[in-house]
Amino acid sequence: MAAAALAEKQLGKPYQWGASGPEKFDCSGLVMYVYDNLGVQLPRVSGQQAYAGVHVDLKDLEPGDLVFFKLNGSRIDHVGIYVGHSKFIHAPRKHVPVRTESLNNSYWRRRFKGGRRLS
Image (cartoon, rainbow, N blue to C red):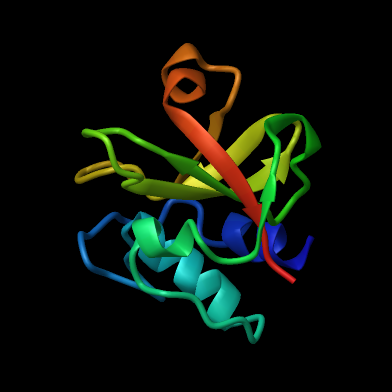
């Protein structure tokens, strides 16, 4: 729950590729920033973050779990933080600030590749 709450405090902050906060973020930088503030060390990029923690099925996601996506190709290249009620927070792309999305949205559902729970 603490990760979800801290992620919510970042809503509206600008996207910048390669940024890991506290004023600007890319997707994996946001995740790294949130968990670093909770004392959990993570790799910098989403493809490596996808190996942290343990696998969680979509139906078993809890607030604070990481959600991973394949947006451009065959490798995981996007990550967000699940906040409950089928929603996640992420830093989507250039010119779009940190925001909440729904996993029920067909775009995100088709690209969803798994969840991970960190201890």
